[in-house]
Length: 215
Image (cartoon, rainbow, N blue to C red; front, side, top):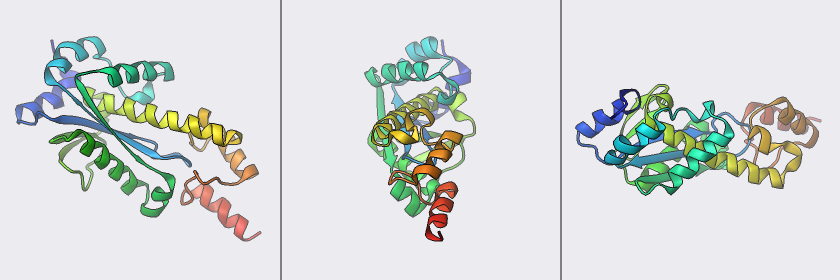
């Protein structure tokens, strides 16, 4: 039995003939360090109706879940034979070069290309330049199970990358705050300066660098 709260947008797209429908979401627009990640997830319609929704109908925005719960869902999605997953990653240097909005949209496009979708449900506002048509849904990660799944893939993928960066730069605490501008992170920036994985164009980092130039 389908749950209209999380399958409404999927059912509408399938009824319009879009069988390679993907949910798309991103993680990491706001942090001062690390990449931005986007994910696209396509489910077989039969599987999503008969198994995914009855079992995981309360799947929702990854940011509202505990880290343990996100990891559990990530592993289930990754092992699912009825799902295709694509991930796009744009690093901090390119974020500085083209700006975070364009970098986020580029990451989304890369993820969609990997799954060869014919239509996308995208969390948030409309996106320019995607490789297929799309429908933008505000708070879509809480309204569409496909977007929810993409939200989990994007966040867990990026979080794991930040844990790896923590091993390279342990003094910054990336494993804990994932690059966001927490008090601990800002204090580390003041004490140790910016690293190559920091986004040099983001204000706290840019101000720090500017201050260093004029010392």
